[in-house]
Image (cartoon, rainbow over all chains, first blue to last red; front, side):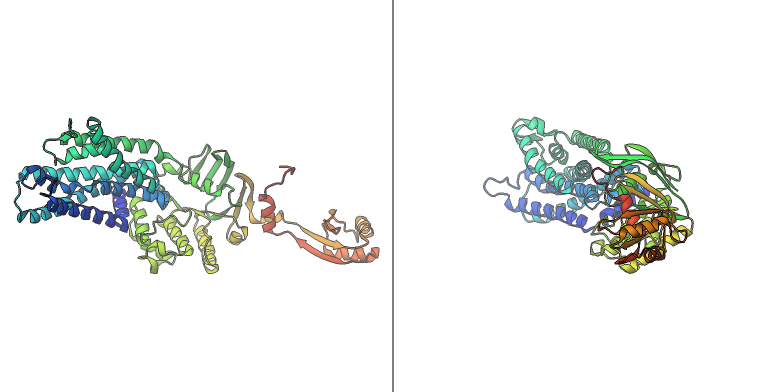
Length: 253
Length: 304
């Protein structure tokens, strides 16, 4: 299994796409932190003197989740797009092992990207906040947000692998996932929060601890981080089993 | 060795492989021949566990591919050459496979050298020519120094020099006792390389045997054109110096097609019959024609 993990890791690190997506995720976080700090205090935008606002500035480290999802999708679908899946299955005829190794490697990658986003986002936030009057957040909160981002990204990258293994078509998987995240999920969370909080995106928000009141919409509340992590893991297992049972078994022609 | 027994596979309503059985033996290059769409690639993919057969079995050294303990050290496969990530370097492409197959990563550079690609090791495969990709695919097949090689159309896209090189290389592999199964849709491409042929058409086995077996299927005949064809025919029928044709036929343009005698006998017959000759030549159906006649789609009304 060690060899297989190293093989999957080399697949990820030996193509430029990975570097591009990681750089994109980090850049997205940087933009979000800067935008949140600069916009605060403008009409209709919460002030930095509210604890909730400062939380979301630090919590912006978790704003690149969609890109991390795409990272996982690309990791799985690129094998079908360039048909390298043939060579992969020749080297490892037990296909479930390939999926397991891919999940592990991408979860690890998601975790590392999460830590990088946290590190950069926190430093940037601290620098920007230093010259402004702002509410303070406890160190404990910051640690919990950091863990939430790293864990959330790890699970999202793995979820992406599962979606990719299930759909196989790279373009369809990416467009479908982005439509889901940006449109469908956002709508459900807004219109039917009691349902939305159980969706992956809703669960991720619960995990990130950026919303102390845990309110979703006007009536519901997000899941607690522990529940949110469990729900996300549940989606991961569900998709992985589904992929292993269906598309993974298909003929490779 | 590779053993295929009563293998069948349909895609939708198309029967790609139909009750196919053959073996590829160690120490020999077995040519797996047939026109495009005959089911060669599907058969190879079933041998390699990539496509699940509807019926029958395919084994390598007695085991289905999926049950091989060490697949890359047992079987080396080079399927379609374009199946590499264009953004990955040749060396990384092979290293990925080494790691997954439990082989030392130095095998990547060793096999690149074997196929003459060492200078291109750090180039992205997207910049490769088709011939270079073929060589890279072959390098991938050789990573585990396997006893069995399965190569799908390895000569496609190779320049003439590359084809000569491939020929020598395959002969070398077989001479070291390896089992080599190599597919092609052009007989001439592998004629000088293979020891045995397995010919398929429309998913079914058409012929299996050595190349000389196939040569026996080729025939010589004499084509003769004469305004006095009837007299010539009568003379040949009666026999010339005890030699008599085994068969005579009238061709499409009214020429006489004579089998079983050399042109000299026909000439002598013409002289004795006083028949004026407009044409006298020997016609030989070569291997390619035998191959074509074996694999061609029988037209409507033809006996199957």
